[in-house]
Image (cartoon, rainbow, N blue to C red; front, side):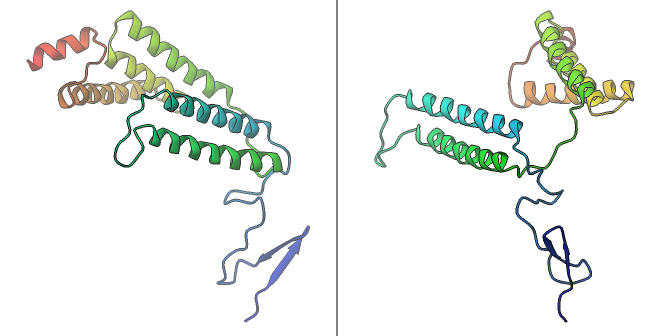
Length: 192
């Protein structure tokens, strides 16, 4: 049975009722078609990736020379990672220049505010000595609010349980030192 073809605005696709796969067009992904406009944010991301690769390369080149039988040392892996990031940055720059990225929705300023507030509040709480559990609980609750969760008491309760479990895992399972506060000291006294 021949495939039905639909042509609209210069695009050719196989119809949906056919068993043949849908034909993808240049600049089109699973979500939608590229905007066709140069994407300054995408170019900025590509520049940031290039800068990150440069930092990784510079750090790896400062490693002391330790050659093994294979004639390379520990710097080989950062070099490989830097090369991979350069390749990704190149693809990102080309796609952004050609306008292949889909047009994005407007920035959610409220969500951005809550994420920044979560990070800043956690840093302040850690420096104030409240400890890992309390600071991570606030981080979780504020982050959940940023993603639209408005059940604040539930957010704090889930954050407290998860932070306590993470504290126990890191402190007693892995032996890592986390910032102590009154709650952490109480748990240490109970478990010793």
